[in-house]
Length: 86
Image (cartoon, rainbow, N blue to C red; front, side):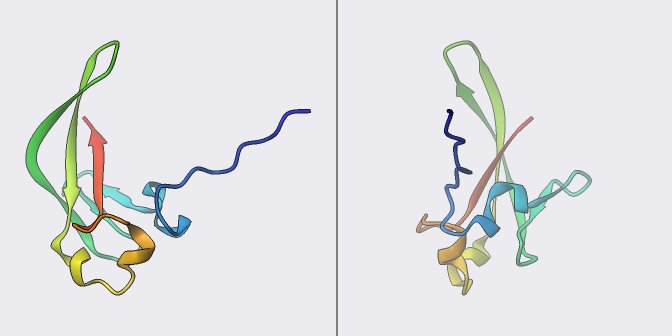
């Protein structure tokens, strides 16, 4: 018998997991489940792994600071941050 692992979530509420954010390829934005847009900050970041590095962009919004459901979406005091590989 093998145990089936549960869904891993870094967010306090699974309704705010990464897969619930919608990416807009034309605008380079993510839209959160509450309808707020997260914008790219304009910088490229290189993540290194044991095999090779890869480039990511970071997306965030200042609206997280005052959003009433922030505690459901993130535990980060600075608000939600989405990273996307390019």
